[in-house]
Each structure stands twice: as C-alpha cells, then as structure tokens.
Image (tube, rainbow, N blue to C red; front, side):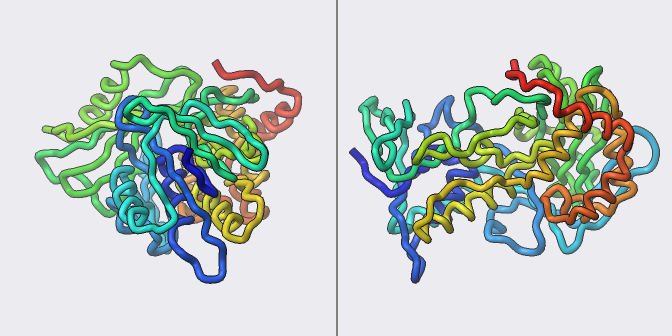
Length: 395
C-alpha cells in the first residue's frame, strides 16, 4: 500500500494546481507528502482543452499562457459592436497541455510529490483518513492510504437544483489564407448567431495571430444539440457570419459545462473533499472555473501547511451565487432575452467592472448598480419565485 499525507485524485486544472501549491519546502511551515493520481491515457483522460481567466498583470502561470488580450468585444444581434479596454486586467488563454507541461516540470523536481497513473475504483473512509482503491495500468490492484483525499473527478450526476442550464460548445482552431483577425481584441460574445428556441447562443473568437484563432459556437440551453449540428453551427458562424474565406481546421474542442444553482458539497466525508468543478468552483452564470479553483486550492494548501482541517472554501460568495440563481431562472423561464440582456450590460457597464463583478470583487453597491442595467421587473419576479421552487434532479 502507498502511504501519503494527501491524495489528490485527478490531474486536471484543480488537481495539478493543488499538487503544485503543496510541492517543495516552505520555511516555517509543514510540508505534507502528496500523491497525485492521474488516469492512464485513454477514455478516462480528457482531451486537450482551453481555459480562460483574467487577472491583473503577470501571474504564476504566464509561461503556459498561449495568448492574452487587453481589449474585449461584444457584438449585439444587430448594430455596432461594443468594445472596451480592461486594463490593468488581461484576459488570458491557457491550453491544458501547456499547463500540464509547466506544472509537470515543477512536480518532477518536487521532493514531496509523487505521481501515479491509475484508474480509481473507490474512495473509502477509514479511521483517521481514507483509502483510494485503484487499478494500475498493468491491471494490478493498489491502495493509497492518506490522511486527506481531494477528489477532482467530474461528478457522476448533478445535485437537485431549481434551475440547471448547460453551456455546451464546439470550437475550431483555424488558420485562414487571409490576415483577417484583430490580434489585440478577443470577441467574448457575438450574438449574430441563430438563436435557439430555448436559451441563447453566441460566437467566441480568440485570435492568436492575424491568420489563427480559436472560433467557437456556444449555447446556454436545457438540452444538448445533435452531434453533427455542432459542426454545422461553427461552419455557419465561420462562413456566413465572420466570412473568413478559405479556412483550415487545425484542431477542434468540445465541452459541456453545467450552469446550476444546485448546492454542490465540497466535503463528502471526514477526510474526503471535492475540489475544482466537482467542488463548485464553476461560476454558475458564466461557466468560468479556472480562477475559482485557484482561490480554492490556494486556501486548501494554506490550511494543510498550517495543520488546519483543509475544507475547501466556496469559490464564489453567497451573494454571487444568489444573483446567479436569479439570472439562471430568468433565462430559463424566458422572462428575459439573453442576447439583449448581455448586450445591454456590456454597453452600459465598463468591461473591467463587469469582469471584477464576475470574479466577486465588487461591492454590494456596485452589484446593485450593475443590476439596475438589467430588466429589473423580470429579474425581481424571478427572485421572488425562487424560494418556492422545488429542487429537482437534472435528467
């Protein structure tokens, strides 16, 4: 049996971030031994994907940042685009394989972190800790005993919620024959896409060069599309909306992010916790996760080094989650027109302030002032009905 102070299950953004924060020696604090369990190559390991976040100036992961932007643009369904600078913030794009490489180099040199490839069968509580039971790549069974276990694997099912929408997207990394992209500006939401009967859709363009960009089609809606229709939606956006001309598809990415007001438990046992998206790090109203899981893993690492019980904190405040619940209900009920709502917000509120709002770094008065730029009547009706709505499983 393998023994460690800390077991981290899953080596995605959350698992790698926590292991990285616990690696190495820190003077004056306790350095726990850590085992990071990653699934072997195969269906249980997700394909490369893109994470975006914003922060002021430089950050600890800048060596893995593929590109950053200091100007953002939103395109309403009709009319001129809305464009604004976000200084001192930068909107940053990281590819998961670049992040894994950067963190992996540090972990290889760490005296207290060990990496294990295995398929986890179960995580079981034991007196004073927990055991992770797993299969090694050669089929042998192995057990990892730890005082604390942090599980970042995706949830098997979502907890019951009053409202659950899905953010589902399909993107192409493209290369064009003409220099068509503005490398200084990222298109955050382009509502010139055909709108679904339920929910909303938009395009998303992250230019990495004059000829290269990630171009995505995204929907917020209760149900997924058929498989072929995602490529059709991106093709329509590329050809008929953006009019990019001759385009080569270099790579693709697809994802589904739940947007839910369900309370997601972070502690599932005396010694077992969930982190990352599985621990509620995703912002329900936007789907952004990377910044939230960094706050979460930073707090967990500090607690472990100080000998405190390392319960992961909520990545987003109660006030932020309450506002998100109202927005999700307003969108799901059809009371508000999504493209009109977001276009109005970005037209009337500076983009830097909106990004701070989405990160939970605005005051109550600032939140109220932003709320006044939404359709107040429909939002208040949505808020008033939430307490009486039952929480139902998502199917």
